[in-house]
Amino acid sequence: MTHAVTDRPSDAELIQTACRQVGGATLAVEGAETTTVNVVHLFESQAFLLVPTDGEAMTLAGECSDGLAAMVEVTDCAPIDLRERVRSLVWLNGSLHAVPANLERDLAVEIAAEHPDDGLLDLGHGYSMLRLQIDNAVIATSAGAASVGSMELAGAAPDPFWEFEGDWIAHLDADHADLVGQLARRLPRDMRSGRVRPLGLDRFGIRFRVEAPAGDSDVRVPFARPVSDVYELSQALRTLAGCPFMNSLPD
Image (cartoon, rainbow, N blue to C red; front, side, top):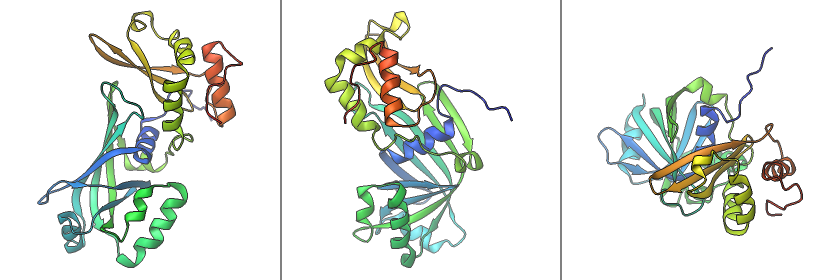
């Protein structure tokens, strides 16, 4: 079997990762005000959501056994202060269903095992769970927008470094200006005059946000090959920088 070679995550993987690192999320249901979502957890072609118990979305979902047409908007933000922090927007479209109250706790425990999120502690304390059966998803980044079907989304996994990416990016930005400067030499020459900040990190490479007077640009610098653990990731960053003995990631 021939395997495609890529230097970036698939759109489905980007969506999976963004939903693990939610900077903000809202639920839109016809006939109800937009609802703030506390947790978004993707499992196969479903999204489990924590929303206010006394909200209109909970009431409408409980009254409609066949499901309600709904959309969840997820905002993925950079973990550092940038001129514009948004990295991507994700829209999950599908039908919204109530989750039986007697199953909520068990589902929360299962979710926490692979998606630790303090928001799960709010379950039963002003928040309840809903289930969105996803029909399709759309992701928009600086490179454009793409649509992903539910089957493709169900077969994708989040980036293996999603849980620690925010701390690593903040560490690079605050404590390793030397490394960022070395990596910036990999950028196209016309982008090096702007302010270069680390934007994202995954198994395929590192992304930068270049803040220039004329506007912002996002650019990816790929690794020679995808990495699978922290040691390989640190080595790949040092190799890109041309400094194989420079420490790059926190212990």
